[in-house]
Amino acid sequence: MYESTFAISDSSAYTEPTDGADCRIELWCNEHADLLYVAGSAIESVLSQVRSDIGIDECVRGDGEAVVITSSCLKRHETTYIERYLESHNCLFLPPLRYENGKKRCRILALDSESLTALYADLVDDQFEIDVLSKREIDVPSRSSPLLSLDEVLPELTDRQREVLSRAIESGYYELPRETTTERLADELGVNRRTVEDHLRRAERKLVRSLHPYLY
Image 1 (tube, one colour):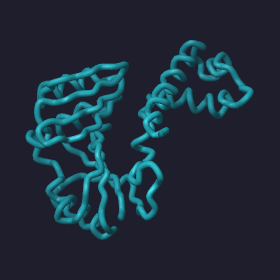
Image 2 (spheres, one colour):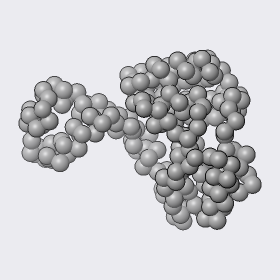
Image 3 (cartoon, helix red, strand yellow):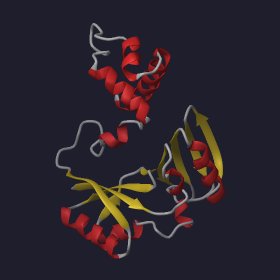
């Protein structure tokens, strides 16, 4: 089997609001409705457009995130979905679909490499704009989830959270004993200590919550 990730440009109600915004949407389609996980600092505009274009039946909010059940399925409102291409090429979607940076990311499973190539060619012929982000052969199942990728496990950190966390790791903040302090990190980054600690806590919280379901 082969797995590939396509990034497809479109103008759907889930794609457009993520263009240029710090926000992503993950989608599990249930035919009659969609289950969405929305995360980032710009979720208000995303939820507003989803509410206007698709409808929202239920929304549970958290700190920079939301779980949404829509009033109907996105496929009823758009014409650029690619499911109709999959069956003819013996390919499958690996949920969830992910929308970010104005593009739809689709993880696709195929029985052989040629099927992926043929699927890509048909989509391009029909004027889909596609970037192939990854392609790999699946020949050995992992213990916990045979189709799990790091992209699906690791959370989306803001640029500042990523910068502060990377500097902390590189400077030995997580070594035993610690080789630096948040005060030193703040001096190096040109911010105050509380800002560094806040970015670290938020990044750590996202990482721990994302990894927790896979510890068992």
